[in-house]
Image 1 (cartoon, rainbow, N blue to C red):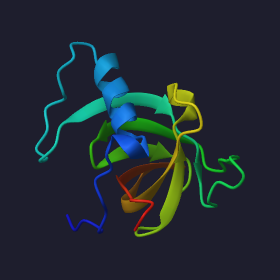
Image 2: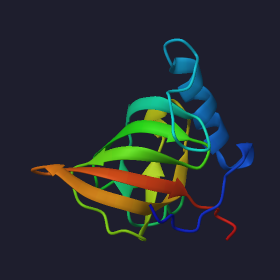
Image 3: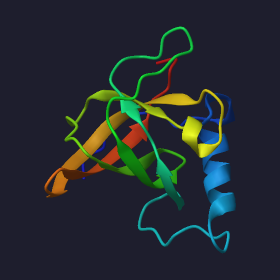
Length: 129
């Protein structure tokens, strides 16, 4: 699989807090089996997505999605709409228990599972770059 350029986000960007919470919520505290370089944890949360950058501290999610799993570098989602590979989208993790936590993600892969359900792979993008 070809990966789009992206940056690993540290604790200061919020992704570390989300990852720590996902690990805490995992049944036995161990990461899922993975063929990837970094550990993945089950997410199992509603993650609204939007294409417009949050302004004035407000975010309007226009695409419903379900977070399947998360890692230090990105996340897997199920989306009700197809998302263009390479596009920048904003993910709202406020429903995950973090106040005002909206992070930019870049879509790496999107494939239709059935009907209006799409499997999406995304990477966290540094807000500085």
